Length: 312
Image (cartoon, rainbow, N blue to C red; front, side, top):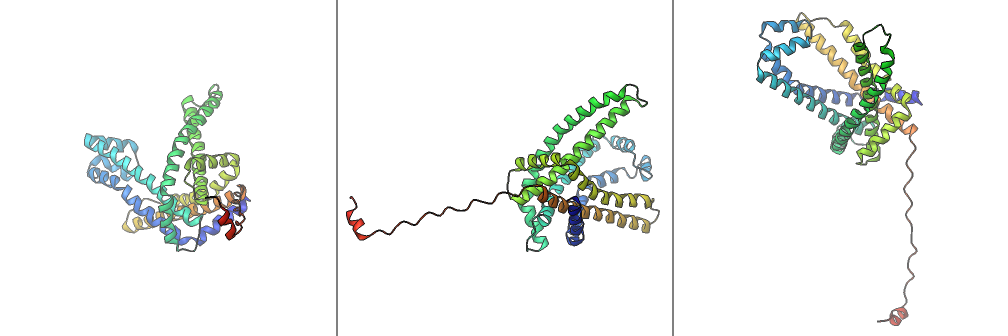
């Protein structure tokens, strides 16, 4: 069952290169828009001597110090720019998922671009409501998992060789990772459910998909981890061979290699959607067929005498 779903996802990755290219292009355009606040911040701080440290490594403390040194207006602009980038990224994620689900989950005879645009038009608002519902539920689930992990962490605090602060940080990290894995996986199956049933009930789709993931956690998480490892391997290979660029050719090579990593990640995302669709069809019972229409007997023809004898 799981092997069939993985094979279906890999085959979809190979056969949907045009869709991968389209999604990669849209992602690059949206990333350029979301990165506008970053470019504005860099242009305002690039001439400062204390910004040279950012050429060697990403130093959050230096970023904060440079932002504060530029004045209150720069701090407010950085906050607004960060919120803007997060909103653009969130809306773009909903838009891309709507188009990808339409092409991968509900194929038809139309061209790929037409199906993508139709999917964005049909599913964008539904997936946006789904994301809001999943975010609220995910916050509650995170608090529950964090409480359970905290109770478990108290057992290891006493007599531990590490400091309690390190244990609590580990507990928070584990709780966040578990919650994120459950929520994002359930969101995928909720999108598939909404696309297959063509319904607008995001709440029912979300909780039904959440029950599906909690009922089949090993299969759902193994499938997600399999395709996540494809993107992770590409990123690890890039990080292992990437070196600080000292020439224009090196910058171009690093840029191209980074785009290859993003292309691989988008392709793995498409494969994951196809594999999850296959697993959903295998484990979920088929909906009952619609009831057959009831045919009523035709009324008998009336004779002329019935019309004459009818009461007035």
